[in-house]
Length: 209
Image 1 (spheres, one colour):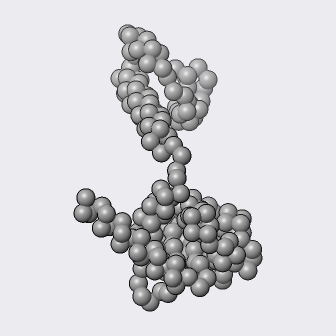
Image 2 (cartoon, helix red, strand yellow; image 1 turned 45 degrees about the vertical axis):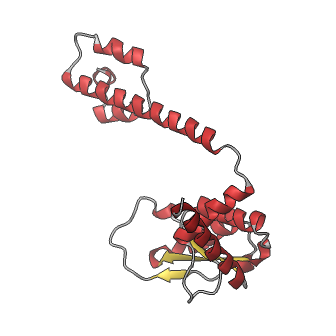
Image 3 (cartoon, one colour; image 1 turned 180 degrees about the horizontal axis):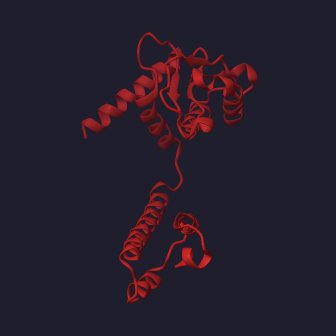
């Protein structure tokens, strides 16, 4: 009806109304409308499901906030140990603390762990970005992104490593992709030993419970 009255396409109306969330009362009133079409009924059903999803997400977010609350130093150590267990260097071939991930917020959490929990000096932290060669024309912006995010000096951002594997398609996030960050601590052999010890203690504690 909207499309007909405004003389526009249905797809345009769909785009305009995509973010509109109907209340349960509004949906029920529309359901009782005897002139409702089958396609409109389908859209109402989709709206009901959308509303349920939104409410479920809101409840989950509230629950998460109540559960997490304020994180202690000990909890930050445990969280970061688990992250390092997943994404940190653990082999003998690497003699330094190296944490690798593409999630900027996760990298920030690990940096906070290093500086606040382990008292690593900020100037001892360096960063090297790994990114596909198709991003070479925008790599300067990528390096600036990580430099600003981690509050590093230019000397702490190492020369990027380009992956030369051919990409078969262009992804939607091409212009927003920031590559994979390798967060490295200088002269950190003993720090790595401590991380491995924390991982071992964590495994023993959990699996023996």
